[in-house]
Length: 429
Image (cartoon, rainbow, N blue to C red):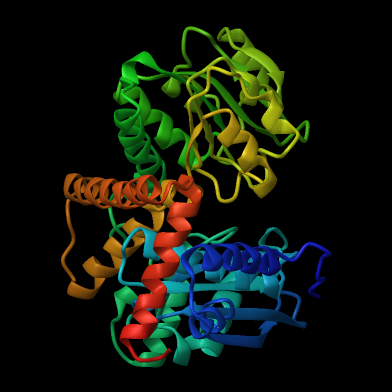
């Protein structure tokens, strides 16, 4: 079922690693250890379908490195899933946990399937089947899965229930992303978007810019984008453009309002996929323009919070000279070849695995709360998140200044050095 594409994300992840390993002078043993995965589990999951037939799905759990603590990472359901995608995502999770200074390693899981074509009962069977195959290699002290692309809180609860049935006890910390009230954490919904803005706030401080004097353009209007806009507005900033995908037309549009978008107004005309009703937006006074227009707005801040590879060596030329900060809410929104252009323009980049680390940080909080069976109020969760994200920002920022490198390179340098140190301290290398 799996089709390997010409693009190999794991080769890209390894190339990024090799470049940074050269910059920090990483020794041969550490390079060999960290540029490959520590463990891989590939397995078949037989599912009895609603029509009585049996379909066999290919599943994975890949653990990149657990020197700093149990692995952490999502399980995604996707029809074009490949093992190299899962490997790359596991490696990136290692760096993300390390840059946020969480006591966790990186892992990722997946199943090649399209949940849109599966009934709820078939999805439940698939979740339980995945756990039956992986149960001896995951759990609260080994590897803690979470939701990812096309999986959600219900999937995690089915997985947790199957794990607890096999393990013979209650282990709510074995999976995160669970529903609140069933071991989930308050604040998880807001965490990624708020985390983006916590780091943005600190970047503006360093640039000596007051948030209330800034404007922003945002790509995406899903969970991350909405909560980033919410907190940015609370700081006094003004979003003048939101770009998102239109399911009906199968293209993206930019919704522009120079006097500032009204978040609640837009939310009221948005579907659960984050798509805005075009005709109703026009009635509310928004200009509806082509999707890429978000990038050329005359603003101070750009927040890509949709999908990967949106700022390329070509599209980066659309960015207005006024832009001072790029806060990467999405994973991999900027192609590597666009980075030199951003540097040339003098744009301060908050790299994705720093900017959007709020999600995994709150997942860590959920794990901690579940393990001790004591749950924090929303204010406490968000306060702890602010502390962690601010500390992570300054760890990267200070290294960037000290070594005279970009924020992206500094984030990689910090993360890889921390993981290599963990391996050395354990005596692995």
